[in-house]
Image (cartoon, rainbow, N blue to C red):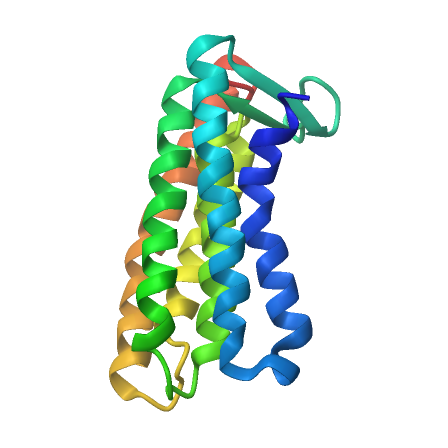
Length: 193
């Protein structure tokens, strides 16, 4: 039962993003409430996850693949990951709440909230991953989502330029990370943490 709590933390923002993608035409600018509700769920369950891990053992779940291997997707929530989950979900909740009114009238309002929820899910997956390959994939998704988030209004030249700079800057980090993964796998024969 305790293993469900970190899953709720990670996937609540993703469910909010999916609802935003499905119902944005019907709800219009009220879709921000879906994102905010999903982030409230993530923030509260992240605190519960922290309490569970602080007073107990780390939580380790295998979602895809076997218990080991380069493609196994495992969630590993220790005390550090739990603290980061609280931090990420809380800051994202604050950003969601602030953006609800700040972004009103912007052409990219719906896209912004969809990407913000997706980015939160990827960041939560990043800090709770138990496999270096999945950490790399999440890191790369962060690069793409941040660039997309910055360009949620493609009509703005400044937004397009900021997205382009972010993409190339983080792309260098992606390349260095990929080289490190190859070296680590060569040295240890595993990507499992």
